[in-house]
Figure 1 (cartoon, rainbow, N blue to C red):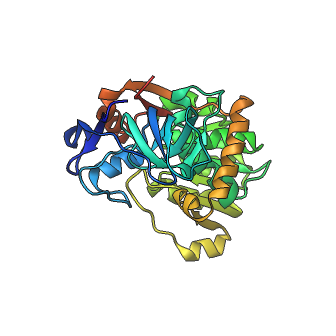
Figure 2 (cartoon, rainbow, N blue to C red; figure 1 turned 90 degrees about the vertical axis):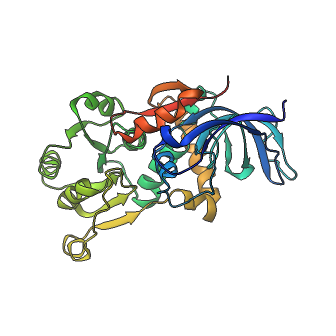
Length: 329
């Protein structure tokens, strides 16, 4: 292996195509507890946009390598690493993977399911883990529940629809346009609404006036407000993110009167606080993938030199499923 590699780096904060450059840099070496991987594919995520703009909760020192989710092959391990071995195909999430090689804590890596190709496997960690923890750990989704999923044609939305349907819930998806309806339906949404509809009224109609037992909301803003109007008695609204750009107020008096819960989900905290739960969730996701229940929706695979354009496209909100950058072969 050569001692240098190519990596995308953000040199100043702004829009990806304006602030990212493809640079030749030194290839890193794994330290104790780390693994060096050859990156095969990187899934584009909304935090990549926020990282580029300097708006993410973590602000790496400039210049930095973006990218937070990958499928890769282990090529070297540091001292004390037994979790993965050289030659393993792995998936994981860590800032700084949009490069030909990357080092990650071995504790953050999981073996990739053989049933998924590199592009599909690259999307397995963030969206599906977020959906899993949101639906099962935070909201206690049960068979027969009515599940309302906002942005149901997006990356995390399609994951939530698939896992909700697998759990036996009645999935109601909300999408931004007619073109996205088939995507949400294919992911498991039995009913698909447009964001321009009276979402609260339609949910009540579909559920016979009961409302949604669980709401999965990566959008915020008006979507959250609509959810508070149609959440069921003892329902749970899971706050996943604010893709709308608007952080909605949570009215404690309204939650009290209607007897519902608003719960937050910061999936990254689980890797820090209780990584065993992440391992258990991954094992379940692999089982679903191998059984054909889980189907990552990869809308497009773009070449490495088009990574900034892919990140910027995600920011428009026009995409469905996942965008993946192919790095190696």
